[in-house]
Image (cartoon, rainbow over all chains, first blue to last red; front, top):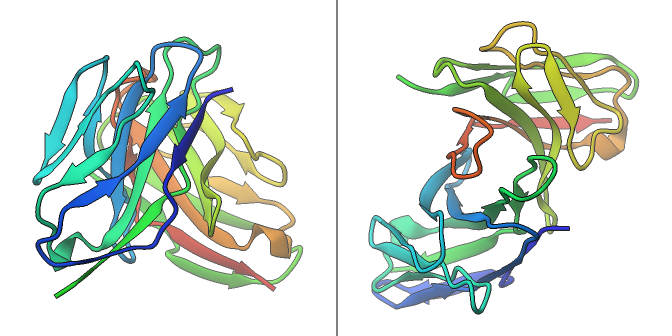
Length: 114
Length: 114
């Protein structure tokens, strides 16, 4: 079945540092890929998405590129802020599967210190 | 404001006492679902609904019931809660079951079963 693997956290950075959170996936069809962010005490909200190979999703300074050859969708940001502290979830949604059940990674906690 | 609402936000109950967590969306979305979030396990889908009167099991449906009598509402029912259902629950909705559709999440319900 489909699966998403993301790096374990917490990831602890100083403000203005470069961020990478790795995400790899397995899927039977042609999935769309997502990054969701969960701020403390809140529900998840979409950060960015990509629907086909080589697409780049971007939002709020975050970027991720859909790499079919490496089955990856790594999240990057050039300069993190304290306000970016949150839990980040990589997810996929597979067109080819018989049933529609989005698959989420386990989440990666990011802590940014001033 | 477009949103998904859940009630209650916090609930402490005892084993075996039936409870219902309500979920409502005002975006005329067809697709709604329930997830539970547990440390180290990420999000796991409990049930989903593709439209009124159409529901189906997700990854972890045991011990839960749902109904979809109206498009906007999708309550989660625990008829005989047990301590292993202590968790953080999220309701989500999306425009359709399309794989590229963004899911919109409610704020979460933290349930403790004693």
